Amino acid sequence: MGWLENVIFKNQEIANERLELTDKNSLYFLSTGLTLRNCTVVLKVPASRLVIKQATFIDCTFEVKQELKNHQQWISASLKGCRFKGRFSGCDFGHWPEYGSDPWFRFGSIEDCDFTEASLDGCRIMGSDPATLRFPKWPCFTILDPIARARELKSVRWPGRFGSVVIEDLHDQPPPTKALTLLAPAEAKRYDTTVEELQAVIEKLDCIIY
Image (cartoon, rainbow, N blue to C red):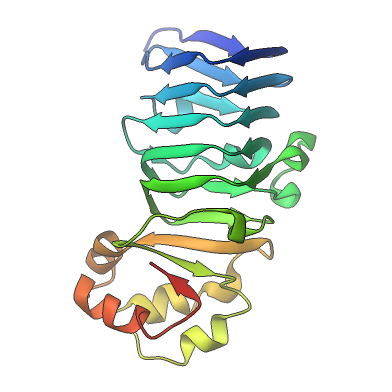
């Protein structure tokens, strides 16, 4: 593999622009001192090609053109009034300063953001109020305050292995976890059940929105 070209956005404010972060041979940095306001950011790179560090996004739209997997660095960004489109899995958003030793993780926040046009699986809201957020509808479903509600969630009978794996492990989630969003078809396939069986249980619980 050849050298990657570093494309760095930092120490500037950009408004009303469209940023295409789609070149497979580039490593993109949205970094310290960067503020994007009312911009559209098109992402078509894997998580390993995208570095987000102490950047501020206000009223921006993120269009993800290929699934973004296991990208934790959203927790080092300030996100306000943003919209997310596309597929995300294993991504964390919000405030989680304990995540790493680097000081930029203290910077993260999320409020007034809209995920209704996104597909989320295994994505978490950390240390921020999920009441200000709009989550995707079914077949996505969001467990609110999963650690505090773990006992209630364990009190019902879940189909397949979903209960014995996902629900049993809720108490092991990091303390700042305020919401966990999952994708029913993916979870059903992973844990030997069906979407219909999952939905039948989810409908009974007021701590899950879908």
